[in-house]
Length: 400
Image (cartoon, rainbow, N blue to C red; front, side, top):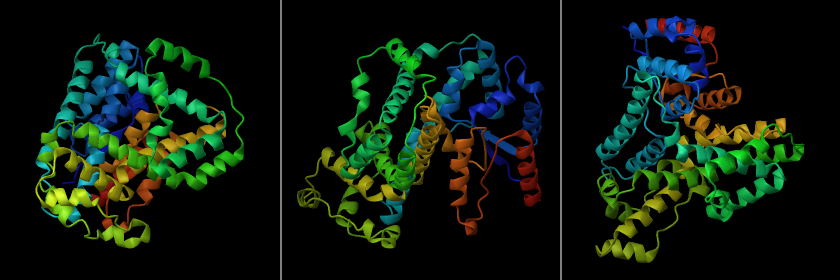
């Protein structure tokens, strides 16, 4: 018996599975996926990004068809949690490896399951109720999408100078120095959409030196933004002190053994361990540490291990690669770029990743190529039905 091939479907492929005006069960994609699923040869997984893109589709019939397809293929249960949980999980695995016994993962798994349930419920509602319109409840999602696109447009005014400014902020860890989001805090969505509409279709002449600079400094930008992403994810996951306290259960051990060198830190002098502040060490030694002190240690853990976290790097490579393409094309990236980045995480947790987005596909292929062959892990991607069939059937034969 073969092991089911875990499969992630980007929303653009979902459009092919459940096209507008044609019941998804009658499409070529739909018939093939149903057959594989019924035989337990594949397991389709969805993500919050899928759910949000479906929910924001203004065409009720198309939205309903896509929701029915995805809900059926995941059997109403296989849903990845929100992205920030993967970032935090990625960090905690490194901490536990270095200081064994300091973490309990039960609490984090509970939080991840709750996150998944929220989006399983949303997708189920969209699949069950054709006229279920929840788009007006997504202001918190629409705003960042629009603002992100507007902010990207500012790069195009002077790309090299703007990118250098951002890299300098990364080096100094002064992430908020150029926080352009705050300047749009007071604007309503309709105001933001008006600004966005003016940007659509605009062409820019970009100096090729800016593109070359971006290619040269891509890794450093990705690492810098990854640290900011770790900070943000920790704040989103550990909103309540009890959740952190029941996950990292032995902060005193970490502080006492702070000088213990992690295996990956031995690979380069740049990973040399920086000491904790003396007053922080004293408070833990005297058992007078506060909740604020534990959060201070958590931040130091992020500073120490962010170099080794694959999740935020995949996320930001997707974004930076898209910006590079946009600079070459002379057009600002779409507002859906952030959700595309969330989709990319599906490539880490599933065997086969399906997308028609060439830039996203290029990023996925790059990360798949970084997996050592000796790990013997099956990871691949496809951009159409024929390629998917070939790779699925080959893997089924390999397992036989």
